[in-house]
Image (cartoon, rainbow, N blue to C red; front, side, top):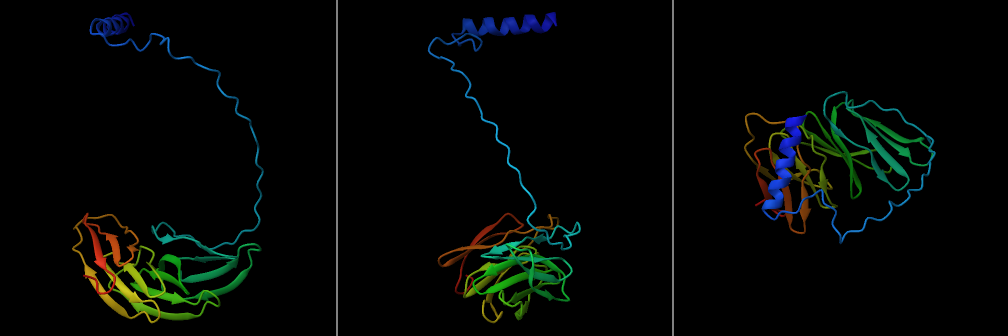
Length: 215
């Protein structure tokens, strides 16, 4: 303790010798006011409803609820997709697929899309749950699809960005980057800005591609 006190005193003395303001000295131009009083308020919440679905189960899936108006769309890794009333929690429709879902659901225009572990993008009618189309892509779709009424952008886990026709699911163009030998299981969703698709890849590269042809 004595040694620490001596060292601290020497430090303050050195500060004074070199014209450095002692941080422990009170500045005359600073006036400390009283701390504002914080009013404590309690907020009581209660569960309006609950709806049970299975979780990702430790698979690091990017399955998230999608909210649109009075509906909540939810999926699970076993291929179940439901539309739920946001106010009542009741089931509006339910759809089962034989494919393990890895990402989504994502509402894009008039389509509700999910990505699957076995490399599929499936589009449903959000009103009634009917499957509109499905597209086969090279690998797992861990990043939720993005897009608009015309185009759906899919970033697959093997480093490919694929553009699909939003109405038919047909592949319009494909862009590929080499993936590292070792990487984390993940993937970012693509974005777009007017005429360009923007995406990052696992090798640290960021690319801007033409929406029309992928160049």
